[in-house]
Image (tube, rainbow, N blue to C red; front, top):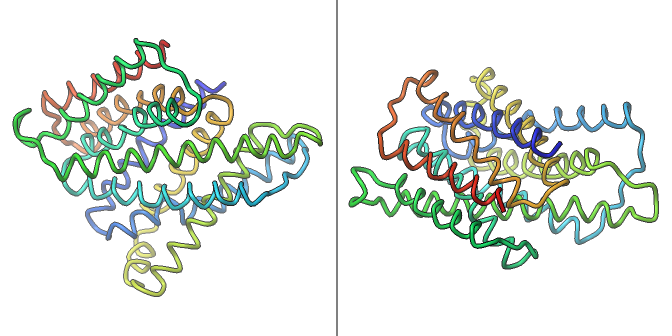
Length: 298
């Protein structure tokens, strides 16, 4: 189940990134970031309502610790998305998405250090290969000419996404623990509650900020309803897949399998966005996929 959910999430995230890349040429970073959440809230609410109609369950209890995880994940995902959009503006779509996928490697390292995940020697080899791949993807004109700005933005986005994923999983597990005295809450319901909480807070933060500081960006999204809705729909479906999979399995394993996104990304980049991918960029994406396989193998 978690494998199927992860593949679904990776596929939809590839399309979300493609739409965000297109919108980033027309709208500011803050607006592109908001497009990810603005229509996702109602979709997430409808999804949660549907789950309870098909499988009635207990309502969860929310603790202060859960609120802390939700707030942390919400802020980190906003930061990560903003950094990724900046990547799209610096380099082409496929490379920007590839750099953001350093999240999987960072999540593996953080999982080992702070969340009790163990990696074998083969797993660590995968992590190293992934790090080399990120360096390769960060080159502007060959391996010897690295763009420090691109590296910093890519790794920063990956770190922020990794913290988002780790805290989302902790929030979902906390709902299961807090509800142990009642009937167990299904993983789908727990993931949906966390998703709705995170998206709701993110939308409130960004709409409030832009409403005060930059109403022109809100109007820019209003005048691009098709693209904005496409981003929100793809983002929400992807998040349903990610959040549900991470409720079942540890983040490093989910995110390393999620590296299959790089292949979807390359296909979209070449056949839909009509962008060329260089040889070293293809090699970097393939190495990231190899790193994912090695870490998953453990």
